[in-house]
Length: 115
Image 1 (cartoon, rainbow, N blue to C red):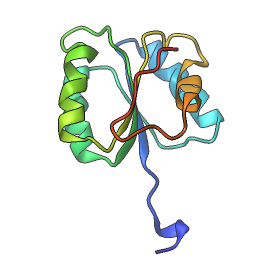
Image 2 (tube, rainbow, N blue to C red; image 1 turned 120 degrees about the vertical axis):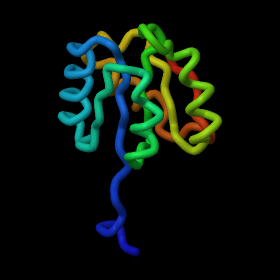
Image 3 (cartoon, helix red, strand yellow; image 1 turned 30 degrees about the vertical axis):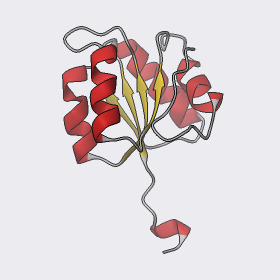
């Protein structure tokens, strides 16, 4: 299988603020990351992980319904290969890009980075 046959993994951005999601998507796409899925309801994350080939999750900790602190252990248990970043301040327009660039190769299961 050559490089062109490999489907690129997608980035999942999870935040309850729509403006933050849109800003992250714009910044990531402007930086060449085209496969971005945005989710404003953390209760939908697990179904999205089953539906799409997610490679990186940018996760806000402070969300209603299902906080990131509760969601993250579920993600790690079922999808230990997904790289994840904790973002308490995704609200800065460059936050998502900085989070992805913070450490391009993380140990399996990810690491916590606050931007």
